[in-house]
Length: 316
Image 1 (cartoon, rainbow, N blue to C red):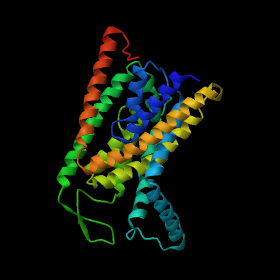
Image 2: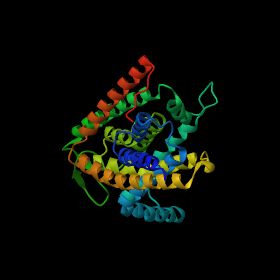
Image 3: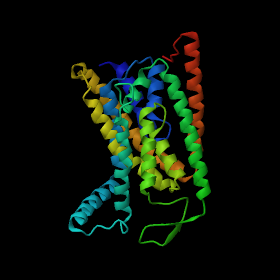
Image 4: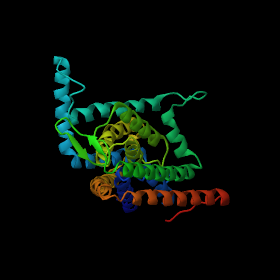
């Protein structure tokens, strides 16, 4: 067994689990970690499996909500075919299902061709990852993540103490924003998710959460929507990458190391969700904004140093 590979995959699994859900960008952190550890490529197989690990964490934490949404979905389909469905009278669960579907529509923008090239928009992610200046792109993207989080915090503060309509079975509630998404809210958040899919270092959870808050959504409702929206997105990303896996490169040692990484991603990911919800509830989101900003500046500085000196910074 290659213990060095096991340790590397566990470290990457921990980073994936933490940063997939905390608003600080998993792709940015993995890019930086692999760069500093001298790993040219963690491998498509490892990438797919680490995403599966984080999916396990989401299903474990949100299993009650997910099961509720599944039942609401089939109930809604039945009402649609029997003519009993009413857009105006949708309850909270049906509203989330519809808005999740609408929030996924902008992902099709990633498959639009880029004029003058044979690439699609989604291919820009690979271009940035393969470019010699990829580290500086990740650094600036982390800075943008910090800015978006700061704007989201400011917007949420402005909503404090205002009254908003709640679900049909409640009259009003006092809190920081609306609990239900509209079509426009979902499209805006979906576009934010597309942006995060292209730029390494731009946090998916941070971007979608911030865009939701900018639209006046309650912070906890925005967070739940962000995590559930990430399920089909993560699955789709994994499916698209599976076809590029070279099965001949997967050995028994590789499987053991990757499995250790998956377990680390799942366990750490679960507690990352718990931590995120608590920090959001206690108004400590500024921690992530400061962290992403400082890390982004550090990454940009390292990248500029490497470019200027034509050297390579490694911590191993």
